[in-house]
Length: 208
Image (cartoon, rainbow, N blue to C red; front, side):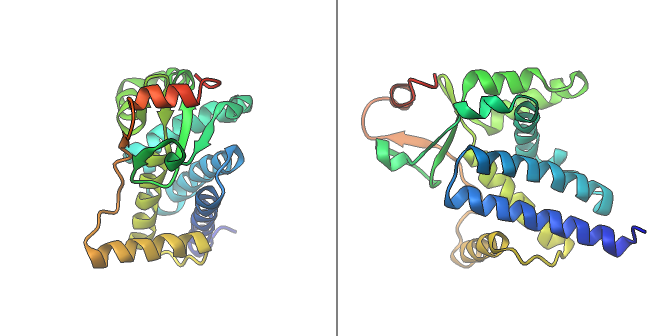
């Protein structure tokens, strides 16, 4: 029997799973950590809808990541085209630790497969929260900012979470509060030499 307490506990478990996947993606990112994270956010939203009447479709970052998740769920082989990159290795400067690069054509395909009833509303959202550079899209700022939204919602709901990933984000969030730093990243990139588009296109010629 699903009592209210059991349903809430299930949502808390899904939230902890999301933060575990997020931590794994931060510590040692690859296509597997990304796929696990996208599936975890899908599952978390499902649990929150049922237990707390919360729907992350109100959060723009979720809309974009869910579109990618749906694409990769049905076409998992496309994950092999994603690249994780440390920006400093290529003289790129940004406010996040690494880039998670998706070929532009895959992002466009994810948009094309948004259900017709949602597409008019969701397409401009996806285009606004991803970072587009010529033929490559950086999705990691979107992932980071969505994770902040998840943290804030879990705090608002009073969830009792214990995962190391949750504690990691909580510590960072509290540090930002104490020092007046913003919780969200812009994901903007600057470059010491040449244009950003040119650098990314050159480095990831096998992707683009």
